[in-house]
Image (cartoon, rainbow, N blue to C red; front, side, top):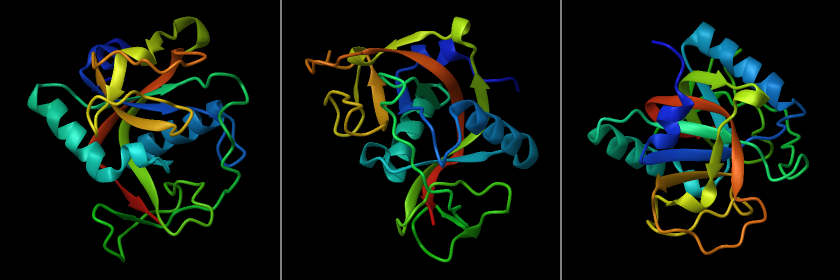
Length: 201
């Protein structure tokens, strides 16, 4: 199968939105290159995050609802509000185990597939991708955050200033939150694959 379509992702009812920035001292372009090579080698990659708005159980609920209406679950990686708005996670420590249900010991993560940035946290979250398409600046489409609401609890506005990764519903209640830059460019789009999300340490 080919790369995921940004048009398909933006037209979908259910979506995960994640703000892209530097991570473990790598630039976004370097991170995308690493993840695409991992997918080529391992047929998947882990996308680490720490957002309470996209906990693994919530991600799996969103993916299940998307599949029920015949849609493939996607994550759109968007540009930050400014070049320095997304903070670097700094830590280059790699996770060694993955668990769907947070029961340890989990599945060992092979060297070369280990997501970095766990830092001193005992457990982090990870999305599971099997496709990742990156777009050049002139081919990026825009995404208006005001047209989305949170998936859980349903109807709350998305505010990326608080959490950089959010399970979202398209065409939800229009947000009344005043965002300085509500329209963002879609830097890349990824397709989620079973088990969609889990815990890493």
